[in-house]
Length: 302
Image (tube, rainbow, N blue to C red; front, top):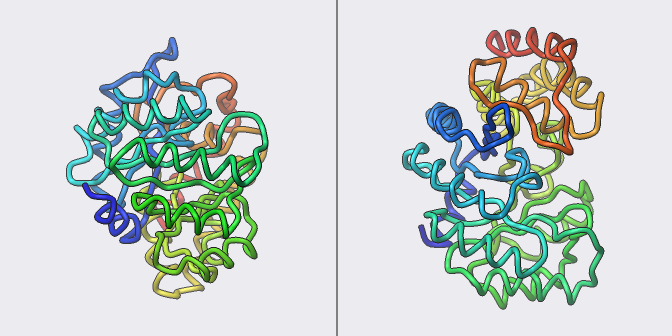
């Protein structure tokens, strides 16, 4: 898939990040992962992200990522697969090249490791990764990797395969400046944890899509929320927020890292063998899983 084809696909609908299935020993478990991706691919997401944030990219060794990308590509039918990528520049280049060789359609470049960096350093980091591959690249503004509008503009000029900008900073003023400045040069993706809680604000800032983590276990509800949002059916989106997403948020907020752990628990509760999360995350308690189960049942009714 060419970078421009991927850019079009990203802007065509809802996005999601399948969880990475592990066995009881924490090893990648390909068969249930493939079954889960195949199931998700039937619900109409326009792009799926393998080994992304919800897929515990931060817990994976770089050499595990190509196998996960290959498994996703083999199971997703025509749905494009974007791989997670990150860490320091040289490691990120290696991951990007391996994901391209494994058949991935692009990468999402997550924040670099540990330290803050000046804008010139971020420019050189992103450009080096873009220059190392031929497929599409998306950058992710979050935490210690916040590209300013002028830096992003330089990257757009220097990197034809830079096609997307994802924001997880929550800085609406910054992202509105970026969308106003860059226009249709990029596709804009909402990336706040539990993105539906912020989707209306980001839509107003020029973001046409976002990545839905709950799509992992309530894909029909995630698609219905996205449909209602894009149709301007505010009463419907507020109903779903009130009856599902705000109660889910209360479970998610009980522990750090539950933005991923609660998703994996949901996948297990709907019958997929996702396995446990890897350290440094921890799984939901039995009590918390019992709180999540009736929410999933309510999602079917919604």
